[in-house]
Length: 325
Image (cartoon, rainbow, N blue to C red; front, side, top):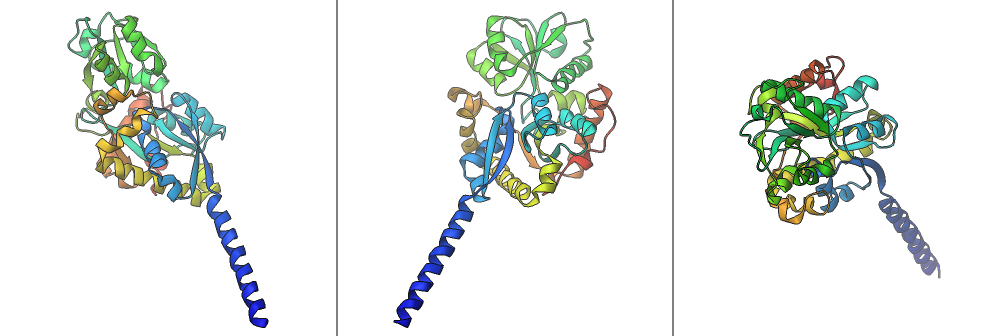
């Protein structure tokens, strides 16, 4: 009888502990993430689809936010803890308004090989180089960083204010606007450029323009955007923030090793149609911890350019806003 009682007690304890552990495992840590659905956000979708967040007991709560200003506002007000992709100059500007609000754990390099920002021109418009855009009606990706960078690149090609007109346009409207002939050309992002080319309505004049014209070296890493997390997230939930970064790092590693397989996650998660997925260039996805001194210097030069055009109001030391996990 005593043996039966002991066995019953042991089984009850085991069942209680099992239930307790199962309950803990199922209670994943929620993280509020702002996502701009472009190819720049690919690590987020890879981490989600491949189960890398789940492995770290993370449950992302996604809010689609179109452009840098919307992401910055959400970070400053505490509505999101992570921006899957935040324009670097706008993130640095936000750090002046609220120090530490945007800490970059990963950055995306853009070069002539890793295409993102680029100047395009509508088919039928006579232009072979950026300087040929003089007198034309141009569109730009939205946000002060994109608009002023576009103007800076135009200036490097000899075009000053008054030599052209340029209007900010929501990214979702770029392909339609070019198809309708509303603009002669403009400064757009992927996957829009590939979509225009696939549709036969536009062609790329030049990609890798930030590296070449702003950093002065086509081989330089133009870290124009990246994944940023808030200091509040780091300080209040350090373990959760670290696990989020670990999942992100695994996604970056996966993309860099298997780019062709990773591309498929663009199709249903971004504006990229199925028939354009294979055309879209991957970016140089890099964790902050893996950046070389030369790459950090490239980021500093981009920040200094932001100061020169008034997007980043004062000179900053970018190393203060890189968080290495």
